[in-house]
Length: 383
Image (tube, rainbow, N blue to C red; front, side, top):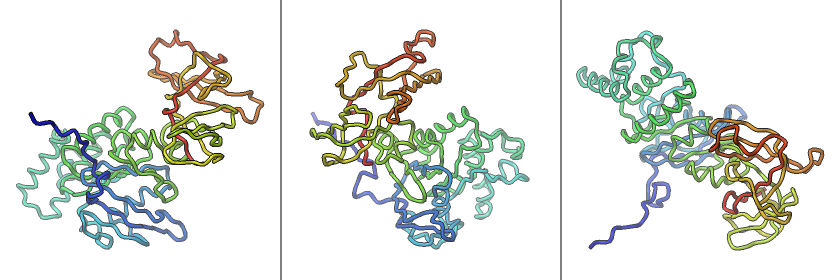
């Protein structure tokens, strides 16, 4: 009997022989003396749902516009499917862009909006009608084909704008805050619909968002940006579990950061003497010298109440519950470690799942609580 091949299939970005579909080489974009994009290099692979994530003004939208040809780089080159498109105008690139405002023509019906680009390309009428029909069915807006944009809800306009963006079968679809105009519940539902649609079509999506949850839900990989530079590129899981800096750790989700110095080394773990006066044993992904200033990063959901607290315990803290945020499925506890008047005291967040009804929860305000976490529940970051 043949033995099945148990080797794990590499993702394209893990395969040194895989050719990137989009290649950005040392691209810089200046507006006067301001660097909107600062020496960015990035590879995106075919079929990815890739997100550019960052706060307002970080350069993510400028980088998207550079990909679309709506801005020209001050320095650097951009390649799509092996072709240098740096100097090619937007209409000649194998790219389409869905704008945050959706930019639907108000005087045209849904059907006419979706067909507009195909008509500009002089596609025969019968073929054009067939493709428009396919897209309206795919995005579940067939019954809206005769309506004008002002007769549509926000979610319906979003679907129509997406259908129009896909009509010309672009090799690359750029989405600028595609869900920003939707309410929370509709946005959550649409995130999964977008991922399913992208997987069915096989088109490479590059989206810009400032919403961390949106990027984590939809993306194969995320590039976290700040002041025109890319701080980290990786899968959502890797960025959340293994941030490479304090900035990324703070930007993605909630995190507790404990400053200290390396006191001892033990294989892939280090012992950190924190400024709180407590020892923390944590995994470390790179070699560090004794005495190196570091930051221990631990997510609030990795911390749990401790039944056997010891004064000389490792990865243990004790404090008083100052605030509680009840969110239904979870509660966030803000615990003050140390005396309030002590400059070294600080707030530690702990997130617990609400398995029991609210009235039966064990922790309450002003209660003393001991907390702990495992050495593998966080990472050590350079200061």
